Length: 268
Ligand code: 4FV
Image (cartoon, rainbow, N blue to C red; front, side):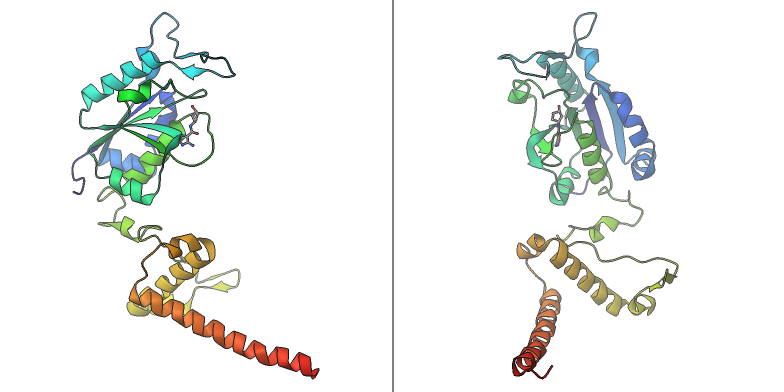
C-alpha cells in the first residue's frame, strides 16, 4: 500500500532545536511544504517532574555515565501515541535492527513514526516493555545521542514517499533499490581535466545507455560490494554480462599462458 496520505514524524528528544536546520533544507523541507510529511520535535524534559525537570540519573549497580529516566520518557511516548495513534514507536539504539533500503521502504508505507532519541549511556530498560514497537540502529558504532540516527531514518524514508524526489518514483533507480550499487554518473562539461564522458552516454541510444548503466552498476557492485551480488538473484542480461567478463578474463589468462611459456623457454 503506497503511503498516499501525509506521513507523520514525531521525535522525542531533550534537544528539539537540533532538528530545525534539518527540517529547513532540501528535499525534507520541500516534503514538509508539499504536505508529504508533518514533523514535530517534543522535548522530553517537558514531561519531567520537579523544578529541575531531571531526565537522567545514575545507573543502579554503579558504573560511569547516566541513564535516561523512565518516567519523562513514558510520559512523552504516551502523549505522542495519543496524538498520533496510528504511529509506530521506534527507539533509535545500537541494539536495534539495522536500517537499510529495504527497511526504509517498509517504514515509508506507514502512516507515522514516533522516534525516541536516547542520550547518555542509554534509556531505562523498562521503557522497552510496552512503549516501544521497534528498535532500529543506523550502524555498529556508538553515538552521543539518538538525534542523528532519527534524522538519518527520516531522510531515508521521506525521499521514498511518492513525489518527494521530483520524478514519479525516482527512488526506483536508487542504489540498493535492486540491491545493486548505482551506475556511474556524468554531467557537463564533456571533458573535465582531460577526462571525457563515455561516448555511449552522448549517443542518444537509450538501449545501449541502459546496457552500459547496468554493466556499470554490476562492475561497481562486484568491485565494492561483492556480498550484494552473492545474495542476489541475477537477471538474464546480468548473467550475460558476467559471462562476457568471464570470457574476457579467460582470454587474458590464455594469452598469459603463452607469456609464461616464453619466459620458461627464455626467449623474452
Ligand atoms: C545509535 C546507533 C546510537 C547510544 C547511547 C545514543 C547512542 C546514546 N542509535 N543507531 N548507532 N545511540 O549510537 O541508533 O544514548
